[in-house]
Image (cartoon, rainbow, N blue to C red; front, side, top):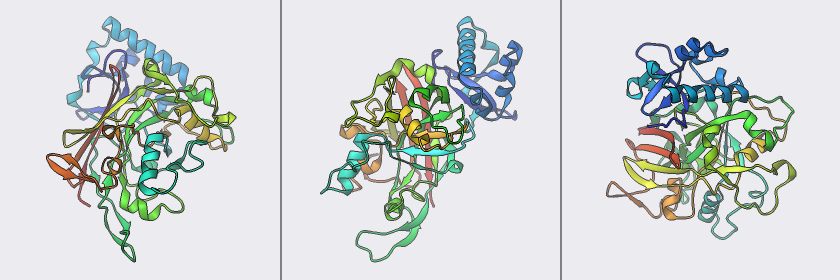
Length: 381
């Protein structure tokens, strides 16, 4: 990936046999931040020698902003050249240790599409959907770095015409295109986070592919929701793009009707004008837009904590599947193929759900700002 000097996302890389440490991406290079920060005498230089971003994330927004300003100035004046390593020469790691993982369902288009698929004779959106950001708790331990192979999960699944469930590999393995938000500053147990404090707690964003076994999910999710159909793997991109870098891509929220409750209301609620591209085995299959997502990340964070739940450094929460209004803007195969009833064409063949050996690559950009890529290849069960 190529990242401009106005971006400088952070990640964790390994070069040769050295221990993993923190770097920033510039063009097709990695800036080795540990020796650079040590030479500059930064008070928090030690955090860049760590094998995760967690220590840096825990410093909070003043340190995030000052570090970014320092690095931008160094890049502008040519002060990083001695500490550049080609991205092709490093191995990227999981950028932060995930504390907790929450997945939302924030796209009205996606929720409507699934409602029409599974409740064709009823309203597509359930009564609560426009009153709160619907979500569920995922499994932090199965969040993996981009490039990690994904073994096809097995579990119970029941065909519509079958009398009983069977056990075996999922036959309806799917993707979900999402944007993930990375928490830096924690909050105290029992103290909700206001929508107005979003930027004080969230450092930046990653791309997310929340792999989903639709046949396992469909049998298990009533009455409590997603479990084994979701918890086997969630892939994230290796570079964390700072919210500060995304400021130019901020756009207003869609009109929210009915009006939200006071704890979800704020004067500075934004989304981001981001466009994803989804490729399966190198072929472009969809371009989901994020700008029309219904619930803002600040509202997701406020709702996640309104009952007093605390957030921790390294928490990850994701938007849920991002889908647009056009057939080529859908963020999951279950939507693209109408639950498998209307195959799409991939590689010149009819295609419904993921096959063994498939490689999925999701990229995204906010105008000229590159958000990187998240990839994974499907292995047999």
